[in-house]
Image (cartoon, rainbow, N blue to C red):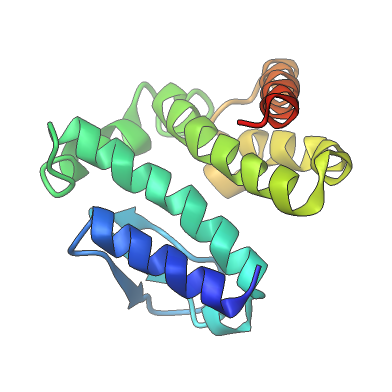
Length: 168
């Protein structure tokens, strides 16, 4: 993945979401959140490799599409229902099924990028990293049942492997 790939991806996102903007957030640390067509980036964004920025963009555009679905075709109308579900339903921490479901869809896209660009062996090597994301503080312990998350990760990686074999 090159810098040109990142710029091309940004242009594609802008075409799908005309209001798309990379907005600087205050402070350092991780990127995020995505609110409507705005993706808030950290001061570290420029230090990320083109591959990492591309992967993040592919992940975050999934959240934009989710907000668009929840807004009945309008990304901005979907922000409030998306955020309420993401942050509060059914629990803010430890059983946040909606956050878990929304992030699973986005991380499946991240996994596709890893598989396509780095190979299935690298993706399988990240199995526990994905389990820790969902069961740890990164996503506020959204789904604490490691066995359940591990099963989802395994099933998703197997599906991606099959997609690659089928040339999808």
